[in-house]
Length: 88
Image (tube, rainbow, N blue to C red):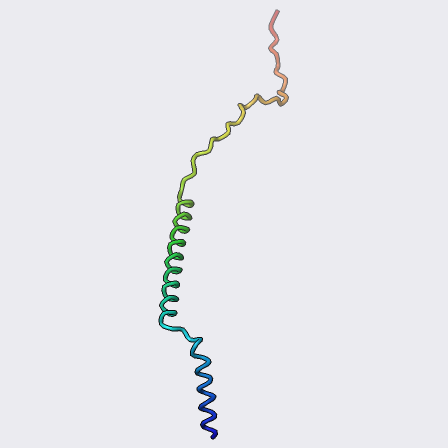
C-alpha cells in the first residue's frame, strides 16, 4: 500500500498545482503587455534623448550686454606743474 499512498499524494499535489499554472491565453496576454511596455519605453527614451540633444546643441540668444559707465577722469593727485616764469 506504500506505492498507492505515494501516488495519491502525488495526484493531490498535481491537482493543487494545476489551477495556478498559466494557460496559453495568459502567456499571450503577458507577451502583449510586455511588448506594449517595451514600445512605450523606447518612445519615451527617444523623446527624452531628443529633447536633451536639442537643449545641449541649441545656441542661446545673445543676452544684452550691460555697458559699463564711461570712464571718469582719474581724480588721483597730479604732481604740481612748474609754471614758466615769464620775463617782465
